[in-house]
Length: 175
Image 1: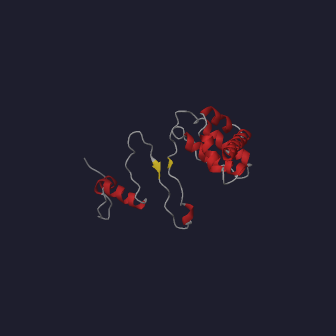
Image 2 (image 1 turned 60 degrees about the vertical axis):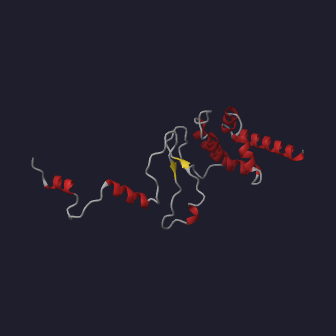
Image 3 (image 1 turned 45 degrees about the vertical axis):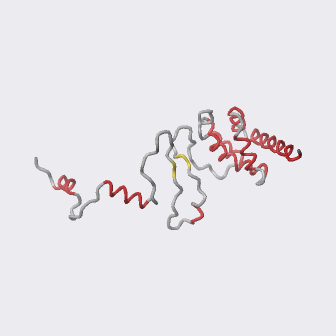
């Protein structure tokens, strides 16, 4: 069988006579360039995790600090990570974020508390203030799934739940 010049170059590597690295070397080089990310698949029953980005040239170092490791997009029950337009009111932004999460609010979702907590924290902070926002957010994500679904469908319902949780905290402080 005769091969043309292009077919021969595919089998020999590049034309310059340099040796092409094998797949192991290519993967290792890519792994080193990506900050040592492991190309190994996750263990059975574990979801792959996205590592924080390494600072890029021209990117402020603070932009990548404190970035949590989050499950990769596309996993079942994960909300799509899309930007919410900035010209909306906080109530509209909350409803858009909540709509994306609503289908994943089930007892079977192992990430339910994290997803809901990440969504509502800024709004709880805005409603009640910085001192009580972490505690009240924690209280709200511990509610039964049906109640979580209720406050995820309306900003007013979230506001009522925040005020109710704040009232409970105030009662506990008085005792």
